[in-house]
Length: 372
Image (cartoon, rainbow, N blue to C red; front, side, top):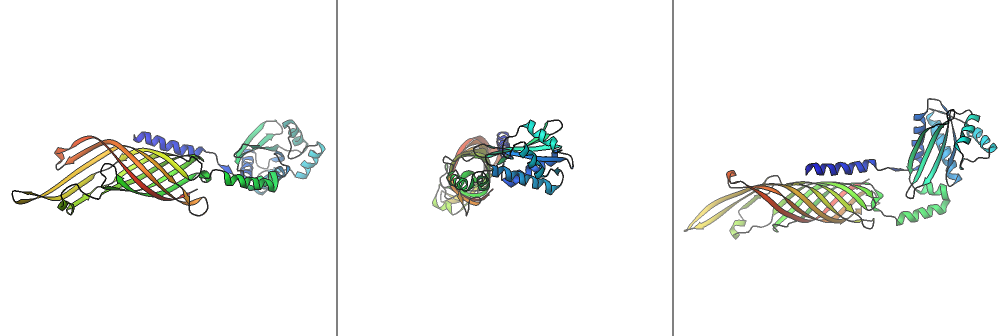
């Protein structure tokens, strides 16, 4: 069971780790510049020839910013744009239009460049694919491709489509699912409810949780908790109650969870699967038995240790504290069913007994955490 749970947790973390990250335009251009510098030798002469995109304004901006990044670092030598523009005009090409590899190589030779840089922007629905290519002028070989996922934000919308595109992007932003505004959620939670097997027992737990959004509708998570069962009553004579002393110990659990957001918004429901270990639970109480006119003082105890498999159903809401992203609270309900093996010792270790058990808890919970 522990091995299975470990596999689930590792899988969840790997999914989160390999998920591509969407970057802003400034970050994409900087990443592309570092890739160019890392591929070429020091002071290699490069020419940023063209960038193919839906808008001339966007292409011009990318070329200017990419050249600026390369010049600022000073690791390669960049051909002056005036020289490139003169050649492009002579050959009737544009920075924002399509230029074949053969034509770019010819232009590169004319201006004496070691390598030429070109790029493309492709709409992938939820993001833009931003790709930069480095081509060796002498060998006509593509030395490297640097591909990034460009976020569809206001700056990109404006450069491609102007103010109207920005308004349309804002409208889509308001209407899209909001559960995945942040990919990672970390929280601490407190729960309280009742033992389903012994209704007079109050179940209190504290724990920590990590959750990773796979998309706006599904997430994977892991939850560590420590649950304490507190007795509120005792089945027996009234005078027993005032003499009862319970040390119920604690219950440790680790769960892997999957949550579903049916509308892509704040409401979710999910299921958790995990390992349950109640450690040692000690019941002890003083009582008095009346027989033949004599009160007899009786001290009884019971030690129980159990391990098992826990299945938990849950539902709740995420509520932001302030703007989306950052602090949040999460109210909800949990229902846990436990099945496993237990060892019971009553009075004397030699009377130990073992067997299976089934139990469960329902409880409300409240967590507070940080999302990023």
